[in-house]
Image (cartoon, rainbow, N blue to C red; front, top):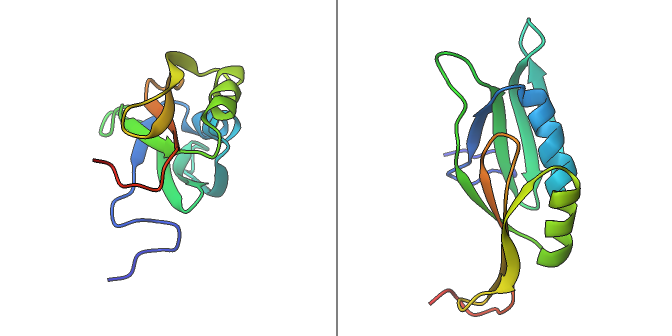
Length: 130
């Protein structure tokens, strides 16, 4: 089996209205790096790819056949407080303040412009989740 570099065997794929602007929002708010953007003949996003560290997600324009999707994503970061501040400054809605969790993460939560939830988490220990 061949899996492209930067992708896991399971990769999030989000359908969003105004998907091109949504990709820009994710890059600015969460610090992702756009790695590919393919447009349809009508100029809307056919497929876009954003890399967060070693993982990638895909984004496409929603349609009647593929309506906007909503999901929850867990994003590991170096500094949860700084990442939450960046997310809020770029239009994400805070849904949970950053706090130290009993399972060893420092974590906060935001909702993006498409309604998806992002748990922004800084792992504070090398121990596995118990």
